[in-house]
Amino acid sequence: MSQKRSGYLSWDEYFMAVALLSGLRSKDPSTQVGACVANPQNKIVGVGYNGFPWGCSDDELPWAREGNYLDTKYPYVCHAELNAVLNSITRDLRDCRLYVALFPCNECTKVIIQSGIREIIYMSDKYSATESVQASKLMLEKSNTHYRRFIPERDSILLDFNRQ
Ligand SMILES: [Zn+2]
Image 1 (cartoon, rainbow, N blue to C red):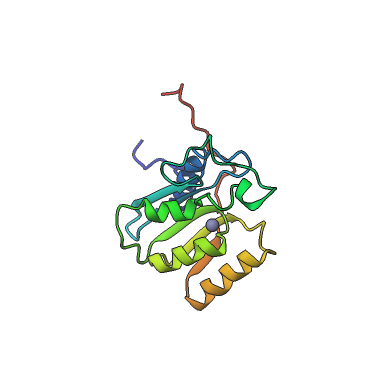
Image 2 (cartoon, rainbow, N blue to C red):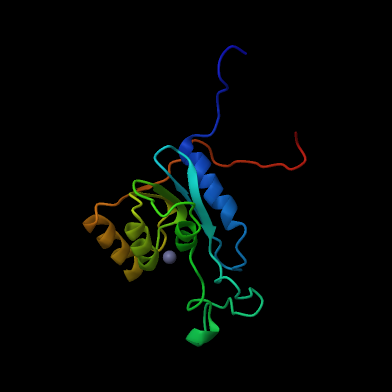
């Protein structure tokens, strides 16, 4: 036992796992997204998940994806990235990294850029064909905000509340 333990989480795995864990808090029946902001010193400065604004009950506003606009979740829901930025412990997110499962939409991309975050690490880009994500990438490239796909060193992490 004279050497450090092997197999420990990389920083990328750690922050993405925090993002995924945060997503489990979401009440959205179809899409659970979490986000985690880490600063250049590898400290977590903000986390968030998709949900309705403060005071707006998860039981009263609709979670539907289809129907009249006002009867869907879209006008009301705050995305994980927005919440992670707004929940952050500091206004200054310059040079921070944002970890999120899903490539950010154009509205969140504006928030990310304006906050000073300089890199996005994402898992899935399944909506890459949408105009929203195309607009995101255009703004990210123009603002010199980097993005890269998350490459894990393992397939899964097990958290067991009954083991210790
Ligand atoms: Zn968004």
